[in-house]
Image (cartoon, rainbow, N blue to C red):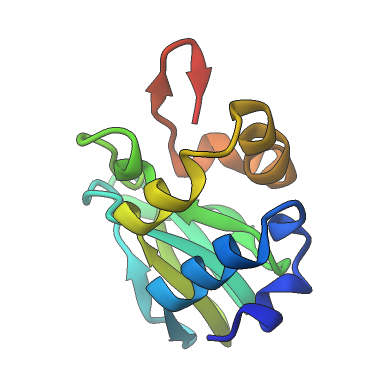
Length: 148
């Protein structure tokens, strides 16, 4: 995936060109296919998944069945990556393709290397807030007194 493709997504506003290039170069473009799981509830959140296009349903296993609890359908919506800051971070929902498209899959260690030098306020305003209420469905870890 090219950094200039990512630049058009508001999630990446405020990142320097070299930071964006490192995310793009360290990540992998993955096809989203309807019905195919990308990440699974309860597994280590070793990757940060950023939607480029298409749609991903977020499912939780509740009462013996899978229930859709949210949908990533806007470019820049994201899930996972929490092992960048918490070795115990897990996906709190399964991500299953709902409509064909693409995601950028970035290893947590690349995410940590790129994002850690950024002030926490920028991290919150750039990455957490655009995800809105869906953040609580995808998982969180705590760094000091700040949710990441």
